[in-house]
Image (tube, rainbow, N blue to C red; front, side):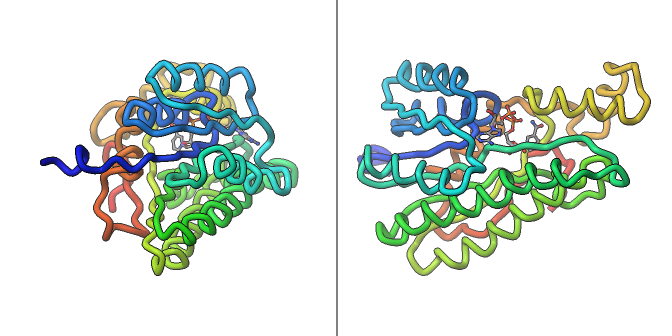
Length: 264
Ligand SMILES: NC(=O)c1ccc[n+]([C@@H]2O[C@H](COP(=O)([O-])OP(=O)(O)OC[C@H]3O[C@@H](n4cnc5c(N)ncnc54)[C@H](O)[C@@H]3O)[C@@H](O)[C@H]2O)c1
């Protein structure tokens, strides 16, 4: 009998940044696989819509609206999940922020905002969920990183540095939680056509003095070895695999879903 028919464990998930883009798709796909999903985002309207789509799949949904960079917000989100469902089995740290800013024009504000969400809040969420998962002796954490974490991108350095931070936290959290059977992995999506990606590339084109946006985008797409941008749904499928299906011996891994852009 297939394992999934025998396995009736309820799965309680928290997805950050799930008001749209990749996070929303991950929430919907988790719901379709029978998970209860908490949606944490600063965007109340988007979070409510994701909750509606999760319930449409027959799953329970909880929305947690607020700025995840506030001190205590990641811990409070985990507490809310535990209060509602009695534990947490899956954390997807997906919320992300980035701003195009030439390296020599770097501002304290941009760096602080980027690192506060992509690094500090993510680390606090890993800690808070990790403590619950340690006591449960089970759980999976997936951190969304970026191919950029290993690239030299002088117009996007706060973001790439923050994602290098995500890789570092993933490795440390994986080792800290390994004795308890808790798995921590990361996934690096390729270019997906989300709101964040659209505005970032428009800003990047402007910063490079390009006013032929479509030609600029096409050039960038041609650099992807598979020759096309990623569908949000196919990247989400890989996240779901890490959440529910990847082997229990796999931890501290970084999974590339970038069509060959990232190569190890
Ligand atoms: N789109 C891409 O091509 C691409 C490529 C590589 C990595 N990524 C990563 O994938 C993840 C999802 O990005 P996306 O493209 O779906 O972008 P998106 O902008 O659609 O999603 C990001 C979400 O984070 C939320 N958010 C932002 N600041 C927040 C805060 N302070 N508190 C709470 N929520 C906040 C936003 O409201 C939004 O819903 C990010 O971590 C991003 O860095 C995206």
